[in-house]
Length: 192
Image (cartoon, rainbow, N blue to C red; front, side):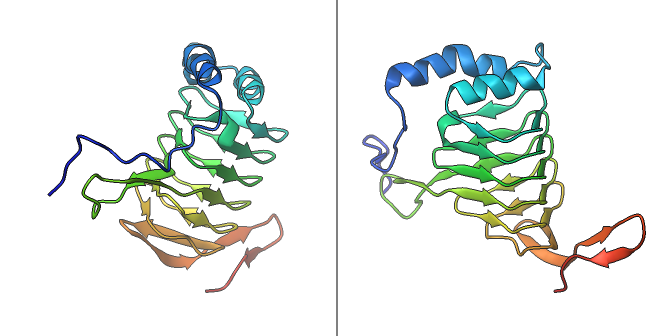
């Protein structure tokens, strides 16, 4: 029998004192989330002030939601699209030259549905260099998006994604190798 009167959130670690979290929710998060302040550099600066590690050349669009900036790392030259939700109860590590498209949801926490009180669990998400998480996708707790991998629009990554491979569907499966075109020729970045 499920009993939610006494939830088990024993695995929750907020990572900062409550007053820092309150400052984030009252001041920092509204600036980062704002669609009225479209300035990427301002968003990057505010996130860094609250402990996010963000590389050079990162471009953050309006409407981004971040639960805990101190559990976020973004590499160099990344694009984070409108309305991306980084629900990071555990660390989210995004490599360099990564595109996270609009409306993507990165979820590091979930509940054990076999537990009588829906025990919370947390798992980090790792997104490898040169990968692309498409629009309106979901990346589930504990998933590693391999280097150069693509998660196509609307897909759900419930398991880790192979490097240099395009993944699609719910749950996402590998559909083909990712090809990279250069000015001179087309190459396969990886063969399946």
